[in-house]
Image (cartoon, rainbow, N blue to C red):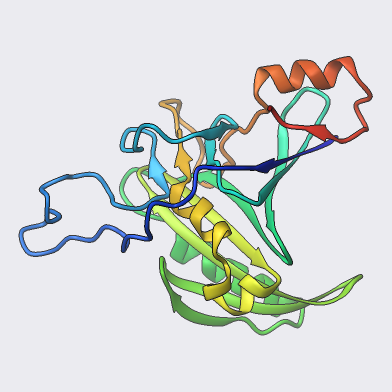
Length: 221
């Protein structure tokens, strides 16, 4: 069951540098919240239209299509954002309270690619170390860029494909979605690296249940 929705409106209000500790550990205005996401739900800015998928809330960005693959019960297996010839696949995972897991996950991705005969290059990106690789698919060679962001007890993994994988400057609206992403980790204890639960909005799941489970349809209005 695959649903898609093209997001409209909600344009970016400027690309701020990712929040860092400066001088006395506070930003210029004394706010303790980050200037750019992905945000924890406790720090997310108000007044932003978002698609609520449970653990992930995706901001509305013009000309970005949200493609969600879900089972008949509305449990989501895959979330992919598409803009032009580029795509961004999103995943969110449980992490320990004490430390992030992207360094470890990144090394495992590199090793997995190596085992498949693919060399991955590590570069510094907006969010820190990321991996770039070119893999062979049924459609030919495909460029991938793996990005990871550690948050409080969660980690977001993004995989760019297409032009945005080789030239981050072309990511545009997809990068805007990542910057505005909100993670709702919840309080329930979960094993480290377990995917956090993603579900279709209730009204969408109900709508899907009334139709053909195998047919694509729109998410929301």
